[in-house]
Length: 460
Image 1 (tube, rainbow, N blue to C red):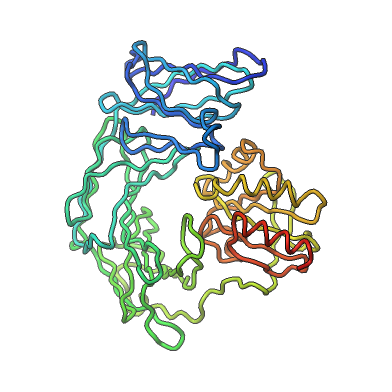
Image 2: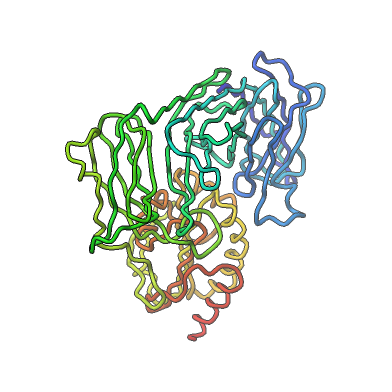
């Protein structure tokens, strides 16, 4: 990826900020007619589907304020663009053109400041994936190409050209990011979650074509069963084998008899996992409470076929209203210790969220209002529990949005110790704790949450 970036602040006077940019092709020649989208890190998300098919979203931002945080423009005959009337903040910039490629940039604005930036387009990469030997059902299965790292506030959803009735696809215009994963999933209807069928890493360098080829029929197979402590088969369980050598994953879903087959494994050591989630209670991103989680290490081919069988001795508990809230200790993003025991006597809201979650952003204005309304006398506190993969994004986002309550950043939900205590696998999710340390409500948002906080503070 080649990005030439020059920034300077031309003025410190109070007032709206502006970004003046120039887009050039890979030879440094000005590129007219290129679509440019930009968005402030804490308020806007940039979406990329294909060159020219890019847009911005500002969930939780009033329409009248949108122009301060996002813009969609085109370069003029000199390859230039101007975005004016911007708020101070950290802006991501995405320039794209079907013929000349894609470029990424960033700029930090200040009150009354003018920022200049140059973005160099990189030739698009392409990927052709040929995946055979794993059954495909168009009613349940889907395939995606996902970046290994999105970075700040840019989301990539490359447009695929699928081969009908197959996992295979072709993607012709990737942005200048080398690391990707081809991910195939299956919808588990009864539990309403997507189980992994395969997840294969690949590299696609700008200007080059990458080919991913997997013929599962020519590789090893592992089959087994999943049952409960009484030997009853468990259906709808996702079983995944992850290679400890290259990170590739092959998965399957157990049938009504608790059976599964993993097709397309490479010889060597794998981490074998059995996972299942329930239907989630609140609309948003992710899964509901997890009830099955077991893992072991295996070596393919198996010395004993029984190594692939799982006996689930107990299901994972989920928090319930009226129970004591699990105790935890952590550090906030600014290094301060925080514990649930230390907040005893207050009404405490645990807010599980992520910077990339649009539904979480929609809730932020309500949380800001709740904190201003109920937090003035010290009897109410919010503790933010980010489940971002990139923990460094969290303090930047918090600063951009002016969030004043304590925030923690302890990793994604699958590894986050606080999320695991409360069996939280999705965002947004909320746990409201009463002054005695008991769970008073789960997964309330908006006005119902505000009313419950008010009732608890009134002793009801």
